[in-house]
Structures are given as C-alpha cells and as structure tokens.
Image 1 (cartoon, rainbow, N blue to C red):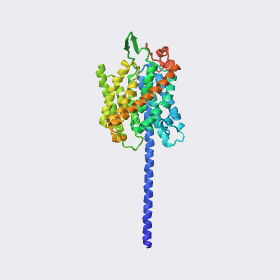
Image 2: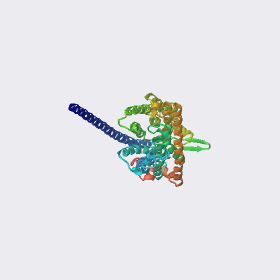
Image 3: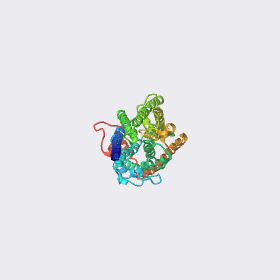
Image 4: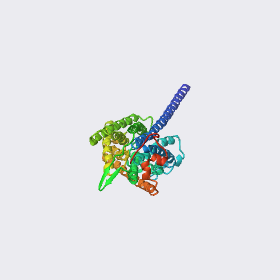
Length: 438
C-alpha cells in the first residue's frame, strides 16, 4: 500500500513539474515573440521615417533651385509638427475607444500607455507624417510657409486620424470588410486628395498655364536636379519595405518576406510600365515619369500586398505605372491643375486603383471579410468614395480658411524671387548663380 502511495506521489510530482516546465516554455516563447515584435515595429517605423528624406529629395529635385530650402523646411516640419500633434490628439482620434465607428474618444496624450502602445504609436506616427508630406510636392513653389505648417497640424490631428479610424481601428468601414493592408487609401489617397484640393485653391505657378484668347498653352517648368529626385525615389523604395512589410505588425510573422516580394515586383513593374508608356507617349523614355512609375507601383500594391499573389502584384504594379503617366497628363493638360511632382496621380489616383485591386485580385480567404468577390469590390469602392468625400470636404474648409486669412499663397514678387529667400532669408546653393524668369 505504501509503495502504491509513493508511486502515485512520484507520478503527481513529475506531472506537476512537467506542467510547470511547459508553462515556463510558453511564457518564454511569448516573451521572445513580444521582443521580436518590439524590435521589428521599431525598425520598420525607422525605415518609414527615413522616407521623409526620400520625399524631400524627390520634391527638391523636381522643382526649381530657388525653392529647395523651402521644400526641405516643409518636409522637416510636417513631421515635427505632425509628431507632436499625433501624440496629443491624432492617436486618440484614430485608435481610442470608438464612438459609433467614426472616431476615437480617449488616450489623448497617450494617457495610460504601456510599452505596446508606445511601440504602436511610433509605428503609426510615421504613417501620419507620410500623409501630411504628400501635399508638399503638389503645392510646391508658391505656398506660404506659415499656412503649410497649419495644414500639417490639421491633417495629423483630424483629417487623417478620422478616416484612419474607419479602416484600421474599430470603424464602420472595417466592420463592413474593407481591406487596406498598409495604406493605399488610408495614407496615400488621404494625402493626395488634400493635395489636389490645395493645388486647385492655390492656383498654378506663375507662367505654367498661359491663356491667349480661348487657347491655353501648357508650359513645362523643369526641375533642377534629376539625380536628386532619383535618389529620393530609391530612398522611398527602400523605406517602403518598412511601410508594407512592417504592417504585418509582428516580427515573427512568416509573411514578412512574402510582402517584401510583392512590394518589389509591383514597384519594378510600375517603373517598366511608366518607362514604356512615356516612350510611346513622348517619343522618348522620360526619367521623371519612370521614377514616378516605381512609386506608382509601390502605392498600388500597398493595399493588397499580403492578399495579392506575386504574379498578380506584377499586373497591379504594371497597370499603376501606365495609369500614373496618363493621370499626370490629364491633370496637367486637361484639368490644368498644377502638380509639380505628380503627387495627386501617384498617391491619389493610383492609390484608389490599388485599393480597388484588392477586390479584383485579392485572396478572399486571406481577406477574411466573408464577402463574395462582387461584395468585396463594392466595399472597396465604397471605402474609396467615403475617404475621398471626407478629405474633399475637410480640405476645402481648411484651405478656404487659410486662403481667406491670406496664409495660402505668396505674392508674385516672392514667387519670382524664390521661397528660399522670400520665406526663409537663405539660399540653398550659396555661391551659385540661380536665374529664372518664371
């Protein structure tokens, strides 16, 4: 009898030790997983932050030398102002407890944050800054600096977080099954539609569209440094691996490499398509169009990079590359909306295309919305339209106020002199003779 009790006791002890060991292993694995997530999202956020340099280089290269310092200042300050604003207000509106699926209501100033919230805030603030900086290029060379700072504040405090809440938090579009993995609509289209409104309300650069009678002549205003623009595109492409692959939100997700693959293929296809389209359209392969084609491919795949196959990512990127050339020509030659860097076309038009491509080509099992193919297409179109309408209305109010307050556009004299001198009292290329009659 005693032997049986001893044996039973030994078995219970072994079982208890085994259970404790298993729990320790599970706890250790969870700790390592959390650590990998922390490292990956922080690194990915840093990559996306580096995209600010890419935007600055692209915009500077595609505009005139006399405005280079102004563009650098705008890219520096839209992130700096945006980061403080997103800390104070934007994060709470985007990710706070939802009020009917429309906006968040708590966590202002990151109240009650733990290490996971700080990690997520850092990853998200760089996305907010990306949305804000897109407008810089479309309104370049004629915008008052003070007005631009106010715009950056409003977009990161209200415009971007509200529509972001609809899609990436507990919002009404998310509940309907809308899918935007890394931000073709959430980030890129929001910035682009605001840029379009701003470009319309501020008007074209002096000498861009010359009207004689009923005839309007469109004049090209060349950028001053194509190699700098190319460097910017390569920096943006590099940073996009943080943008898209980072949106897996986990350092242990085995789909990181898959997302990086579809991102690479779409960008490459976009560059090739834009090159050939410009070759056919203009008679020669255009460098700036080809560079924008790479960016178009990246924007196009951003919404569906996890749910679209590698083969279809080539199609999505290729069509994005064709679309961006046609769209840039349409906005410039037909609508006469002056966008010096093609930001509206790259981020807005192609962003909408990429969002729709999720419904057309995405794997419905991976999307997990429970919708049919037709239903998913319908929800994607609804999301595109809803975000477009939200940004259109709020941006018109914002830029209307700035225009009424005379904070939107510089004078003709200041524009001719260049914003480096007129707005900042400095030169970007001291010692070089910079001349322009436009």
